[in-house]
Length: 128
Image (tube, rainbow, N blue to C red; front, side, top):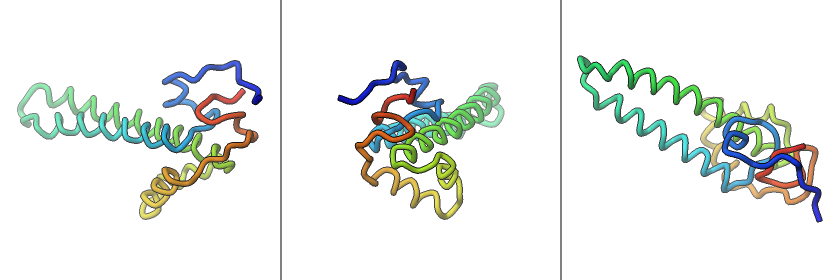
């Protein structure tokens, strides 16, 4: 039986912590979540009239969700490359134009490693 971490997986850990490992399905669902949130906010921003008082609010919400999603997707990507046994710095390749789409697809389809490694005993669970 594998040793379990004393920490429990939470939404906060999943979206905003680089600790541990993340499997393909969790990684893809995390990315889809942020794509839906950003799409919804962008739709509200683009459909608001320029003289509408809510335009300032939706602009602020857009930049806030964009910032949160950038940080969160980086954390998800770090955990995903950890699951492949690679160092977290490899996650920065997701922000390289021209390479990012290929890296995203590869991270979504590349099989996970089932063995415990230095990043955690099991996938979709915090390290430590």
